Image (tube, rainbow, N blue to C red; front, side, top):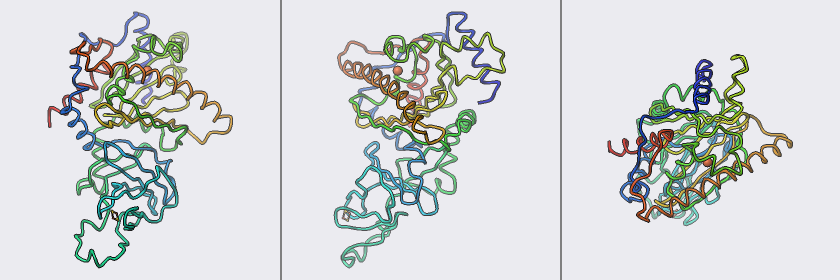
Length: 387
Ligand code: FES
Ligand SMILES: [Fe+2]
């Protein structure tokens, strides 16, 4: 982030705090409750997930040739595999014979070939079909069955981005990365480059499955109005109550949740103002990745729909370097609080999910300072309307 932008943001927060105010819209807004429950809406959202670059992990999780991980995302089983030349490839983890699953473990190392569990068709790590038992029986098979279905992929800011639909000519020679760059825009790219996440390492990854709509999971990150009550026992003591800054850059969002210590900067010279020590940035990389920028680490939460009323959430922490034993203890303690706070959020989202069909509300209100929610839902609606 540019130095002047950092100083301006701190000034913005200090002026809100002085006026007992915050970043606010002129009016409150609302969304129809059935945006969480309508099958047709969910079908379209799921389609959106298959058309956009999404993050599936971090490059440090598969550092060596033959390292891989698998996931099922939006009902697409994928395998991400480090190649001999250091590049990464992603395939649909499904055999071209009759749809058997190839890799069954969630991750592994030293993979030389992919062998289908059903009739033992064997593929190279680059996806090419190598071995077919009793090959004579398939002597006239079509060429399209001779390699796995590849997905477009790139590594950017340390993250592994892919699209859950087959690679096309336009994706090749940097095309997919260009699409991603256009979606992110210059400001967000500048911010993400500044965090140097490509040299970070993954710490304490956890997967969650919860019976809530995926947007309810994202919603919990998008405002800090709930912190006073929901996180009373965990993190509330650190933060200013319902004071924040909410910026939108195309589809991307950057919220700033200031800590109480930010007010102490009034007494300090601007040269000593460092925003990361006094507030957490929360980025929504549309549609489903949340980055929480803390002073000495970054928390990554990736939300995937798994049916209309079910969500898979992948969470991990990025550390600037491999932690020492002391570091491990320190960050574990930190994450205990983080994961407790996450459970507090899930608990609220579950309450909301259970009332969605009750008929009590036709609409949910977004307060003038809950514009983070408003932007997120408006962006989804606008994209779906264009389809
Ligand atoms: S389904 Fe894979 S070998 Fe038959
Ligand atoms: Fe929360």
